[in-house]
Length: 257
Image 1 (cartoon, rainbow, N blue to C red):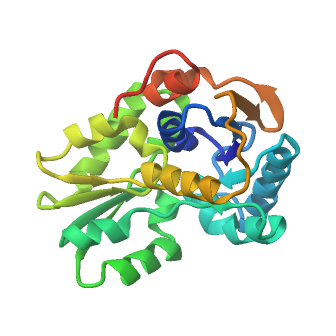
Image 2 (image 1 turned 30 degrees about the vertical axis):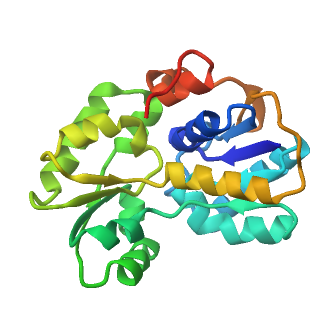
């Protein structure tokens, strides 16, 4: 089975790394879009068109399941992708882990990009799953961009600013951007001890495997990782190798979770 994962930048790495860890024989196609990243500020129709183009490239390369490990792509294009492919191709999207956080916490912080923080989508998730909870929506300005660039100083500055804006009494932190698990240790170090962390990467990977197991495709694969950069064959960006997940996918070393 070949899995096509679509995101503009490095936000796909945590889910991809979980897939590699849980089922090493899977063949992965990582479809990034460095020419047009980030997608968050772009108009919805533009994002839909860009995502569908990547979907077609993944299918042409033999993908049997499509994963959108990106909040922007999932919110904007998930329904369009499912309509485009029809029911025979599994499509897995990403949802910030607000629901599981709200089941165990009364005081929650959601760290996300400025666009996601201001979105009606996140507001609906909080209203639906965390009604009655004290939820602080924290815009992490520049954090995803700094992660994409491998800019350690920019990452540290963005985390420090987000931590300063986070209430001291939060019990749980939801990572509402798929980039953020790449720097989870630094994020946790910026908060008081004992804060529970919630992100969606492992859950998305496990849901992908469930959908694969439900299919009739018994091909085990060879564990190949193929990279597409805005439609061109390529390799993982050098910035990806700054993170354990990127090094795992590049075959350099295991990732420890």
